[in-house]
Length: 220
Image (cartoon, rainbow, N blue to C red; front, top):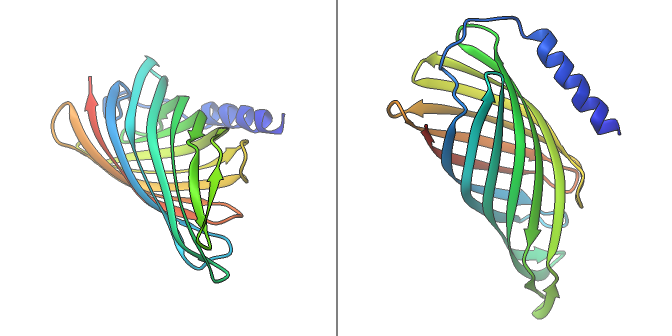
């Protein structure tokens, strides 16, 4: 209930704060893109870090000049080969994630856009084995569902080059609430193609994660 109130307030604030601006095509929402990312994770109880990677595909479609819907499918891998309190530990987990969401967006000047992103994510992790002090253990398969919402600002330095930043929260699921930050840039390679890169930081009580995500995008 509390999260519903927060989301409702953000939506109202979004439309109250956004003043009319000249419409243009600096920011488009009909696209598909491939995504790849690398990350490191802090591990509570160890000075060493876990490594992670992801790849997938994202699709977006504008259903209104202020509203777009999106879907993302990705495969994920996370591995740790180190020690906890001097005990050798090795584990690799592989999973996948399907996320669906809605984006509310509006120009607040001729070159800057404000957005509100709401996402529902369903993820699953395959069963795997872990080595603890040389002994094998089976980690059962699991699933998780989370909700994320964030505020995003994008600005065009020139029409072909844009900067973006966002802050948000991820709640629900089996893990602690995280606060999520990102900053990045997008460069258009032509009328229909672009590349962008984002640095992402997730802060959580059990250990932060940070990484780089790269998107290759086709606008249609």
